[in-house]
Figure (tube, rainbow, N blue to C red):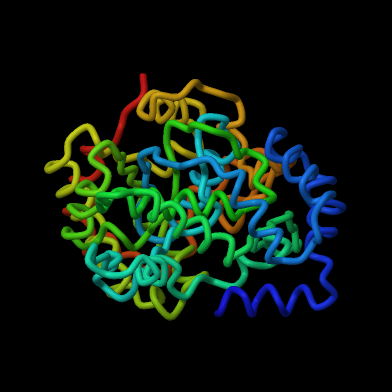
Length: 368
């Protein structure tokens, strides 16, 4: 979707600046310094979208932190872990799945440094899901719980191009840093926006099933971390079949995809050692504090109690599906789902994953 057209559709009366201040920036406390500067200049400027973009682009913090990527087959807890990282003062937490122009089985963004910067941005921006461009972000659950999400795509492009044009001899990492800077800079309602963060955290479920993509990730981010989540295939399958029936309803096909992801974990851990860790989904649910303390050490950040609560932009959030929470705390009663499987399908899942699953479990982080 053309980003300027998107903004025009939602700003027919020229009230974008007024709404940003009066509703989102005024009502929800985002980073104080940036809020103060934006308010000051908004009050002195014609509040048209082009001026909003110009003013905001002048108050951007560069994001050059390494990436901690959460991976694993869909339904293994990646969304939950992403929400547990959210809000930590030493992390930039990407709120959705990190796409970066991924498509098909070869999901690496095709960045050619000889191309024009505009082409790089198009590759990254890709077909960004319009739901993340709405003024409110929906949790995806049945209760229609929503949260403020103010994001200007054309501001993102402005920040991206300004960043890359400021660098004389650009490297591949610079292009990725430009994208991260532009993303978090264009997210105006971000309540955790400040100068330096130690890591950017993001979830990219499909990335690591192709070995070349893992190599590419560590080529761009040699200081990055890859966090795999593994789930018992017998408890994973009912959830996956229910929520993604077209992909996982067939037990044989589902088991094959689970095995593919499991083998990717084994290969990645063998090749990249301590930069890769494998976390058991059941531990994430039942030993949340132990897991999050381990991951805090892995990323070199201080442990904070916010790591124990799923949030979106620091707002406590109710998790979906098997991650149902009561009073915004993680429930523990959702890991045993084998009884939901028909015996024939359960036999297929057990038989086809009988070699891969024990091998992956052997690589799982253990807690004393």
